[in-house]
Image (tube, rainbow, N blue to C red; front, side, top):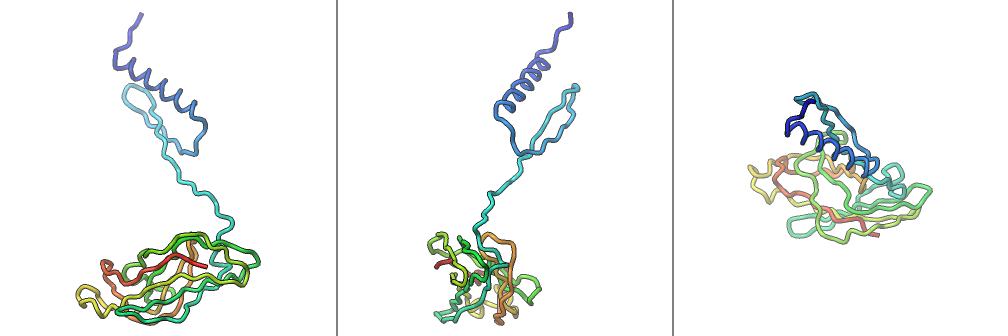
Length: 193
């Protein structure tokens, strides 16, 4: 009769325990890869996949008209309302912060840092067909920064993404932005009704 080494026996016990644990947990949404290891034992590694729950009620860029409201000045900055009008045939929900950045041209690259999230209450807003919701963007007058810190650059306007959407629109707003990423040039508040 042949006996196993203690290390080989322990490896066998660990493999059985892992198999029992995996079967007790039920099925998972994971991708498995098998890798051979010394001694002819196959070790299986799982890489979890990220899945997000669908949001069928959220407003998508295709059913929104996004415009800029009337800007108002404050010391060293401008506050500009982003206006989201539901042009679709159903009520939909905007929840959270839109993505906002300066761009060099309508289809051009981003200029400097994107807008940072800035306060406000993050609550879902249901937008009926024909109704509007807004989010405030604060644009710093970048000439207040030293030129070597900012890297002043002409911008054509904003690239705006509704909350939880990868679709975007360009909104003309010719001004000067900072090309350096370390400068806080834009901030945005969550969408409100």
